[in-house]
Image (tube, rainbow, N blue to C red; front, side):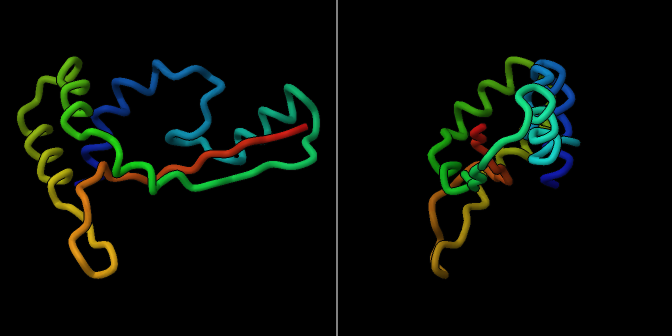
Amino acid sequence: MKEAIRMVPESIYDPEFPDTSHFRSGRGCHSALRRIKEEWGTSRWYLEFDIRKCFHTIDRYRFISIFKEEIDDPKFFYSTKKLFSAGRLVGGERGPYSVPHSVRAMIVSS
């Protein structure tokens, strides 16, 4: 279900991202590092970190309202609301609702 929900917004918004954006479908750390090497030469260090703990702060209702500006599909929104309302477990207890995620970020220094 998550994959199907990912595909709809990706098909709309992915073309809007600049070519320098590497943390999306078909790209990642390796393509970002190749681009950095091409543009700036070698780097002495880089930091990679996982920002998944930030996703619980995303207002899922605002997120859906943004999608509604471009998407007119009641089945998509029904599935999305179900996914967002599933909640999550934190230490065996029901935790806060959050936007599903799988994101990494990277900082590079030359």
